[in-house]
Structure formats: C-alpha cells, structure tokens
Image 1 (tube, rainbow, N blue to C red):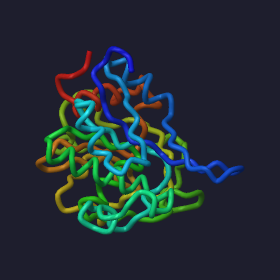
Image 2: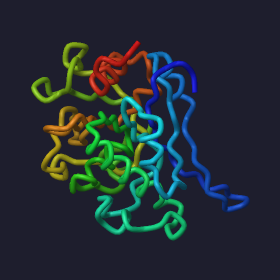
Image 3: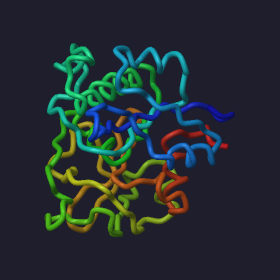
Image 4: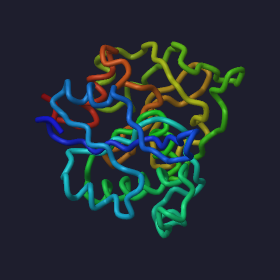
Length: 239
C-alpha cells in the first residue's frame, strides 16, 4: 500500500462486455495524486457484505467517494432498501450505491472527513435527500460540457478552508451527465461553487466534515484548487 496514511476510496463498477463479469475499477490518477501528498489510496470493493468492517480494519484518515457512472438508486440512505439488501441480490450497478451508503453513514458516525468527487458529489446530495437532475451535462443539454473546460466560481463566504485564498474563479473540466442544480441542493448542504449557467460544482455540509466537488482534482493535480481542496477535506494530514 505504500508508506502514506491510508484513505479509503470507493470504486466504479465496470461490466466486462465479453463475459458479463462485474469488476471494480479505480483510475490510476487517485493513487498517484494521493501518494504525492503522503497518502495511500485503499480501494473499497463493492462486493463486500460488510464494507464498514474494512473501514474499521484499515483505520483511514478519511473517505473518498470517487467518480465514474451515475447514482442508480433513488433512496441511497442506509436505512432504506439498500441497507437491508444483500450484495448478491442487487444488480451490479446498484452494489456501489449500497457500499457508499454504508461507508458514508459509518464515516459520519466515526467523524471521519469525506471528500466526494463528481458522482460522489451527486451521491452526498442524494444521501441528504437532495435531487439529482438527469442529463444536464449531456451533449446538447442545457449545461453541456463533458470534458470541456468551463469557468467555476467560488462563493468566498461558503467555500471551505483555504480555497478562496487560492483563486475565486478558475476553469475546470467536468466529466458527467447528471448533476445538481441550485433548486435541488439538500437542506443540510451549502453550495460553495457554481457555473454561470446554474450548475452546482461544489457542496459542503453545514456541520459535518463533508466536501463534494463536481470536477476531478485527481486528474488535474496542478490546478490551483487541487491541493487546497485536499487540505480542506483532510486538514493537518498532508505531507
């Protein structure tokens, strides 16, 4: 795992087209980015009946809900249908929702900080009963920008930690289809970053150490907000 302090990172599920086999996948960017800051990425499998046992075993300094794919379940709270389901009874694309639901709930109970990226930001909004708007960033959609550079502006009074000190407006690249709009933000979350066309790009909880962004800091390690975001999410832990 390397010499750095562990961070538990969730993974996307990829289905092999030849065999139909469900596989977990995590982009190499995560391991490289975290390692450059003295941290070690520990992937969280989506096939575990008790994913919280892994969290307790490795004692991570925090949890990262990574990107990739869409949130597949309307009710992602651990007290809903997901929390009572067995992994083997769920469709492969739903297993990740269950894993992240249980891990996020456990992180909240244990007061572990959470960083949520892209799909992860949408997941925390759904977890706290906000809305995910479908296809807002799809080609030809009202907020179309998959993979293209676009300006994101921070709200200084709401942005966490040192982000406003770095730069209040900067171009970022988002790779997503669904998203969160201003009217769909969960009641306990604060929108600290957005675009001119109304898409929410950054959320944080009003009491808990939970931060979510729609862009991918691990893909742009030299971006002016990337290191600052990691410092804000996991204060006092970076090398």
